[in-house]
Figure 1: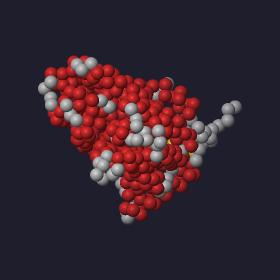
Figure 2: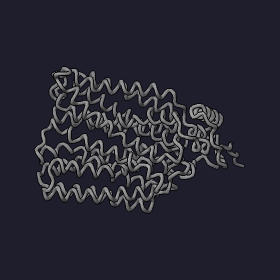
Figure 3: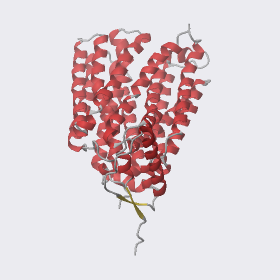
Figure 4: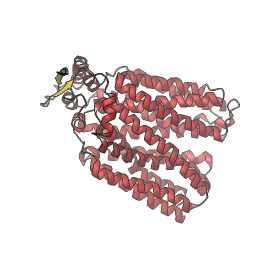
Length: 478
């Protein structure tokens, strides 16, 4: 006779989802959500500082070496996401979102202390590893602590805050690179070290966050899960000064004799959840190609086709970054009201159509630099909400036991496609000097977004205001 698995009944998900909004949830957003701001800052800063890095008496980096350092960051992000994502599902959310931000802090400060190209490249790789690990650990934790009725809007806005970091990086570069304010050799070093100081503040705030009760309940720690939820309830009741709403009826029955679900989860990704896997691959690939193809060649288009000076590119980047943040902020609540499937389909489809239309106007030469930037800003106002919804969808679509590694896998795939294939293809097209050739790149990006919209229309789940366990039942559920 096979041994009967040890089980217990819990209503932890219902207790978390019915909580009123309080200061605790704002702490979750600020302490965890800043990871995307840091990523935006890191991605932007090397491009903004490229001139200073080339002129540095100690580093004196060439253009190819700066490009290699950017690639090292992306490689580190992919590796860090996969490695730390696996550890996040294995050892818990809090341990790993502490470790990943500590890796980031040490590595980015080390970038500011670099003494040659190889030290700089290695430290950029480690910085990327910390940020990549953040995506897995932080995305999973936020979704598991935010009430279901606000999960969509909150997740989209936090993912969109990447562009706040990009704007900060663009503006900050003007300050630290102004020789009248900061000596040239100190300025670029200070930019990296300031990022590390911000990370230390984040590290401090995260000490006040608990482990995810949802992770605890599915990894054999039922008593600890109940204790943590009771602590959150008491905290929020004290903050609001009113009794908590009653807990909705219903219980989950979960196994408590399994602490690692990696093997079962890996099998589930390609069997039980293969529809969700195809959806995640399609959404991530389309938005990553579209985004990175434009973003990483932004300066080249402006300088080569519109005659914008390299020193002024940051001024054009600023409205683009602001539009990207405002998209999720303005449209995000619709993902919780109108619904996931409709909004994912609409934002992807509209982004694709606008991308093709703008590419055609670019080919005809009907746009100047300001109009081109305005068109990109409008496109990515919509596309930013679409891209953020890809991360939201991946997090919601898979069981809690493998949520972090699923996020990591799709993030790594999107970063690989978008960070390598997209910029490489557009770089080749730009080098032809032909607007028609570049239009084919825009056409490909637009078509990919439209295809993703069609796939989402068929496969996306109506996950709005639903418990995570209702959208994707835990592997440990009996």
